[in-house]
Structure formats: C-alpha cells, structure tokens
Image 1 (cartoon, rainbow, N blue to C red):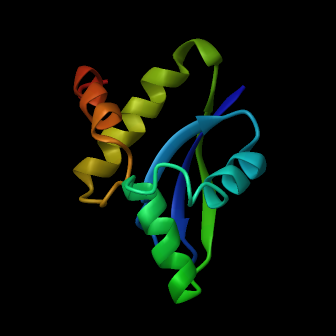
Image 2 (cartoon, rainbow, N blue to C red):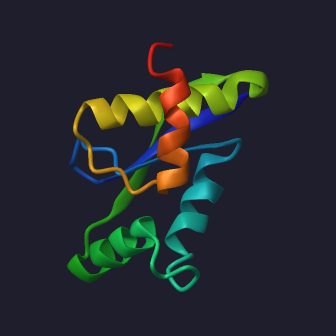
Length: 104
C-alpha cells in the first residue's frame, strides 16, 4: 500500500506539502535533509524557516491506497488542501496536475 501524506508544523492543522511514499519516516528524513538541493524550492525554504524558528515538522498520513491509484489520490489531496486555503509548497507542476481530479 502507498501512503498519501502531508507535512505540517507540529501543533498546526495546515498541511504545507502533500506527497506519496511507502515509508513515511524515511521520506520525512529525506525532506528534512534536502535543504541544500534546489534551494529555491518553496518546500525547502519552508523547512529552513522552521529550523531557524526551531519549529518541528511532522508527517501525517492522509490516506493509504493501492499503487495503481496513488498519483490520482495524491492529486485529490493536493486539491483538497488548496480548497482549504492551505499554503502548499508543492511545485506548480504538481499543483497544475490536480486540475484533472477536481471533481473526484
């Protein structure tokens, strides 16, 4: 099973990033350790800002699903977060792909 997950600051409801993985804790470590690569990316900027403020980031499982529908479900959750007004740090390319799943 694939896990659709969100990243957020501990104690906050707002999801700041949506992704998919088979191993959530390894994926979280990967996100937190990527600060130097593609430094202009919104997610990495957010992670760096959290570190500077000494705010921890946590991973929350939004859904578990079959691999055959994981991309569609990830897009669904991105769209859901956008509808809630969350300030996602996903790339524009990923966010644009969600338009095909708005009514799913």
